[in-house]
Image (cartoon, rainbow, N blue to C red; front, side, top):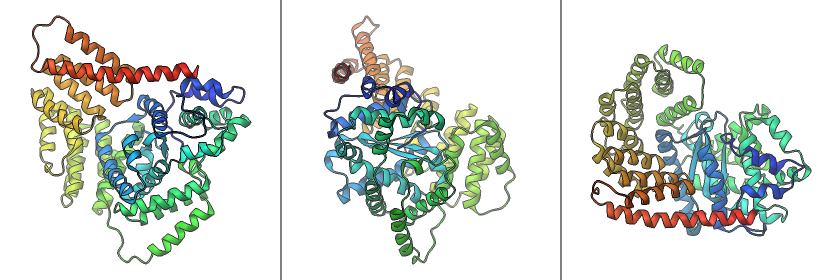
Length: 510
């Protein structure tokens, strides 16, 4: 349960974990959740939101439409399979968030948080060999949530309060980039005891393995991915973990777990046909590696490697070309980026889904160079049946600038109706409305953006600004403004109720 893309909570962590400070000192940063012996689903969701809000604010948080689309293509089948198997109850399905937050971090890690939030490092996406291996990790973490392991851990020891659980999670998130700082902070006997309780028990790890394996296979993923991922972790464990595998520390391998995986491996070895290379995963792994905060020297190295690439099979060539093209784009080397994208397109002609990723990269490259016509041409070449959120979000700013804001607003409105928590869509919708002079709707979209990021106070401020604008003197109303004003009043009351509840929790914690 260790992440490396949160630093803003470090002050709270030092208070909560230092041996010379009582646990009561940490309560000012965490919600009041009951008597510490159990946790309701509503309380668990609130605790998860408190932590997720910090992740959204962290500079390493990334909402990359292309990678998000790929991860969701794995995550949604896992959720559906968990429901079919009865692992995900209708209550948890309704009350929990089931959101994946990605962070720009090269370490190999994923973690479950209370309330259905999961964290995923780009380093993990870049390290796994197939979508099946990534599915195995997500299925394992999903099971930690569906089986309510955090709540069950609390029930095992009356000494662990909800505040302690939250403080320890925030502590792991904040200090994991500096192991020395972590050792200095987690030094009191009381803190060490809580840390030992926070680590999932062996029984819980085995349960997550067993149920997660069933969920992944039910979702249609190759069970070999689950076994090969364990093999990667085992090899890293034999090398004593150089720090790049936080997943090993929060999910330690045991003899029993490895024996179970070896038994599954023995069954899988009877399979005859080897799996076919997954070109799309190779491209997405390359994208994750480039976006996980590499320096200019590494970017230039990827460009050079791609430029010098000879004749090799598409499965080997495509990730190298993709990484080189994206790196060249980030280095603002337009000529190299365009050349490598064209080579990538040629390489992927026989695979429509992989070719879609090349076209998205071409559009992204042209948008970065300030050539909207070429960017839109690349997007137009993608078959409609393959297009999704990345195409919408890439095309929207281009079309807004070309005078098609009204058309864009209609598509974005449909998107936020489908997923009200799509912050990027709300942000673009605010721009589209602003371009049309529909100020009231633009302010409301800005408010909904804050809601999607769990910043309810910020959202309330924007809703109140919209109310003030609606009541103030204006040179005429935009069509439908009276309906929009009514929606804003309703949403303002809803968000104000949440803010009041949060304030009550803070008062109770003092």
